[in-house]
Image 1 (tube, rainbow, N blue to C red):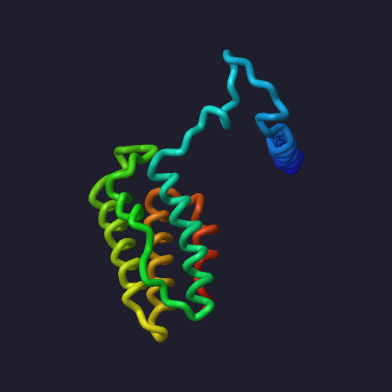
Image 2 (spheres, helix red, strand yellow):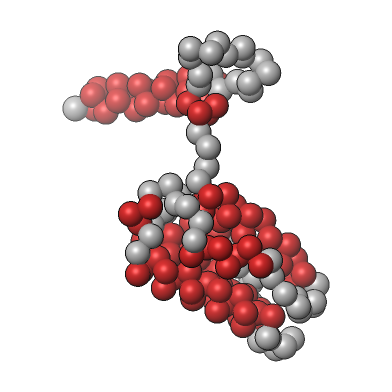
Amino acid sequence: MNTLRSLWALSFMALSIVGCNSAESPEETPVSNSTKSTSDMYQPSELASLMRKMYEDNQQLKSQIEKGEIPKSFPEDFYTIHTAEATDPQEINEIFNAFAEAYLSDMEAIIASDSTTVTASYNKMVSTCVSCHQVYCQGPIPKIKKLYIPK
């Protein structure tokens, strides 16, 4: 039994190492027209791109708040969360829309905050992101949790 587990673990590690080491940038690996790598073919959905932008903007927002600044606005394109095309359009349902609306309300609460409430408002927004991702796409949760501002 231990031999089987060891073999399984060794195989998994070998595949992981080979997979990680075989990723080359497009400049290093010429790609013919007939064969494209998976990474060349992947185009993130509109919603995935928007969420990546939200993450980057929220990193800046965190930095602002940590410096004692209260943001006056947030990017208007965040409102497209309801209409941005998703990777799996079937996942855009009442639950997703409720989370999206909560996120927008949280963002509005941040800009309406004062110095005593801004950190709590911001952390509530981050919690909304985490809650939504627990339902839809768990992968980015560890990264999102790094947005929290320690109390």
